[in-house]
Image 1: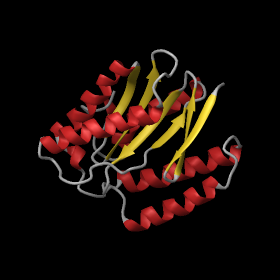
Image 2: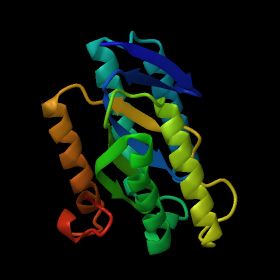
Image 3: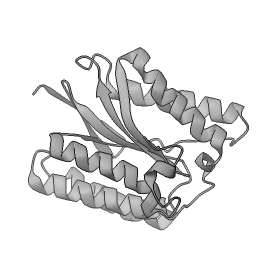
Length: 195
């Protein structure tokens, strides 16, 4: 597979021809200082490991699980708990079809969201451009609605190239169960912002 690696701030990001991606975006205030420090240590360890190694994949899962524990605890102002803010994110996810990207599964949580991104054709728009559009347009819409002022999203996002169908199904299940595990609903079907 043709791959391109780019790094934005601390996390490594990979682009793969015809790739499918699991992404997580969090609000700027979603992690307390001790969580940021712990994640920075884990990310430094991650940057010292060869990216195609099993150890890299294992440590990447550790970083993700650490982040998720804090996020699901509901830190920060949690602006996405407001229907107008969550609807703004859903609207922009759906509008990605304009860029040739579909989003078959997502969940909007109070201080973060997860989605699976799939290119309709070979990726002709860089993933970082897709993410920049999503974050920029959603922040603008949410600020306009008066839900929050100042920086809205954390600069960095987490993404993972979904390598096979087994991993795809794990990501779908993770997305669906996130609001259940966080205690927001009993069934993902009851969460208005999960598909």
